[in-house]
Length: 395
Image 1 (tube, one colour):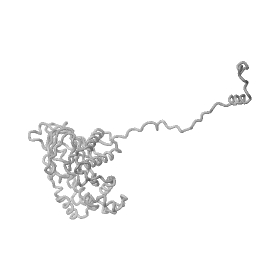
Image 2: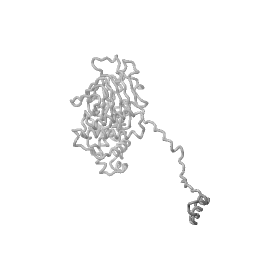
Image 3: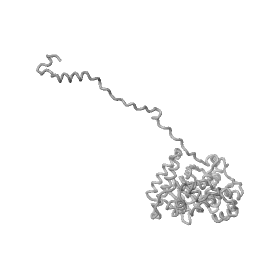
Image 4: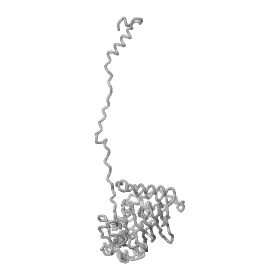
């Protein structure tokens, strides 16, 4: 700074000169840079979506000639119910109906539309198709009237009805659309409501409204569900049904215990895989599942105990084989497949369980209309049919 610029000011001291010299001589400030490893660009890209897991089993009569439509619909639903036309209707007039089934592994979901008809699940049908699943029906349009144990239950849009396929029922329906769920009885075996569920129950209340909203969401997403979604959907559906039942007046005093559904499912699968093994015993189950005998007995106590549970699983599998018209095995061979070494012992146990002999189960009369049905290639899906899906549900 010149002397003229400092006019009117005191000259700088030695300290100030020294300070100015230090500032002018300092190197420029260095900015510290962190050397983080760079993330590959590929890792920043979203993972591709998982592929859908379900392929629907679809059947429609619309591509058949009108005179063949009703007979084809009868044949398709024959494993479940017998159906008939109202008195004033002729089969020649046509029966345009659609049925789409989705197999979630331990639950079937069915979307259906059909014209007016009557339906019956008779004692004879129970013998020829031994399934006792729970059937939850949500009517979308139309009306139904179903008689169960002498009581008539009216179905209407937005109403949820729960009925058992293990008991006879009959009814009639107008033109309807519906979404229904088939759930094996074992899904509910360990719940507190298992012995309290009444056949022909109409679900109601706030929780039922939530269940209907949930069904609507599942109905819309079935085609996009992944393999990881399926067990969660089954579990949630089961839990919401139990919650609805528990909240209703007739179930008000029944509470849902801590869930052990996963363990029950492991027991069922292990027993089913080892039906023919002579070593299928309580000790084997405890060892393979890593649980105590006390826990095993508590788990299967609602099913009549461990040995009764094993025996019933064996007899149910034998009944499915015996009532399968395509199974050419001898009765003694079927008995051996499910773990019976004595034909006489098998026959006694079978008759005690079902009230008729193995031979009677095999010789159930086939409904006459099955002689006039659609070709099998039109009512099956690959190597499976709707009847086979029903029979294998819970196996």
